[in-house]
Image (cartoon, rainbow, N blue to C red; front, side, top):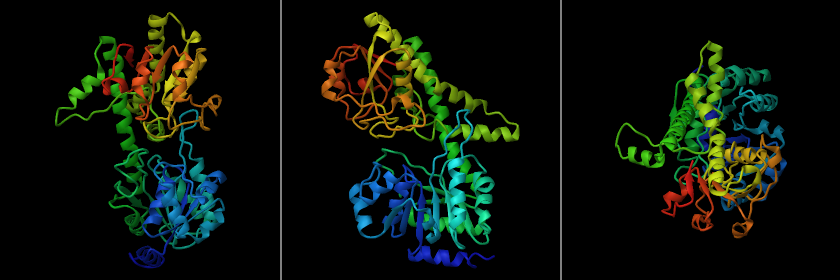
Length: 447
């Protein structure tokens, strides 16, 4: 089949004319910004999600993702560029279908690709010849060809002959105002030359810089390598934190000093654990896949172990500080956690170490409240059902609440740190938030 033979030529022509209809499945932190970006670039977009409340909000111009402006959503909805539905039979109308569903881990840290498989089965019921299907969900190398392709071909359509299949890893960074979906370089790959041409043509409409690679396995490996790089380096500084704490050395000062070297060093900073969908989860996808080749991933697993143990380390430091400052144990103490989301200045609670910190403190019998300008109520999560619907304390209630200690877990800019230091109670700062603001450190312990 030549590069422009049917059914590729009609798809490329539709993309070139911006008449292609794009379906985005999974309207979370990845799917919704992508859907809106495609609509902004002149494509007709239908967003699919199994969660009816999300669909209702989007139809009413109500964005639940910080990266999507409600006013822009209203403009696109009013202009007829977007529609939102839980009716997956509308997939039959799509020229391009992008899968942006979760890829979590099981309790045993094995990949849970049930969302991808179920979505693929649904697509197979409705897909038509000449369509392009792209997986964006992060996964292990081989998923697109080994899992997705056979399910799609249950439709009777053959990938590379009747339909086209690609992989393009998401690179969303919630809260990053400098880089948006359209401006983050996009890795793309296809199952064969025609599929690569199709997926490249599609993303060149939505994204400013498209970077094709040779195979879908390579594209999958690119994404997982990015996340492993971050996980391993964060584990390194977390381990250094424990060592330098014991020596009485300020790790943050060490890192800032090392960062003045103009080559050979890249600063990473410690924290109370890892959060977000990618870094705590994705490295274990490669660990699982490596076992198929009788290979071990000792470095990756060690990094995961170090990062996973950080909440316990922080709680132990809190316990020590309380004992010295108040003579109280955790079971007699009232603790304020500052920041429940996993990252500063966003409301994203996915895999947040703050949830683990709260669970550990509650298990020790402590009374725990939290302060977070972005999280009013703890939402449903895959873990920690006992934390569901806990509400944040109001800032003006903190002083009168009688806290024994404050634990800064996420350093949101909107927090009044000067007011916290003025309470004159012990503060455990896992983010260096107090020192970075040049506030009094008399009652502050970094951890």
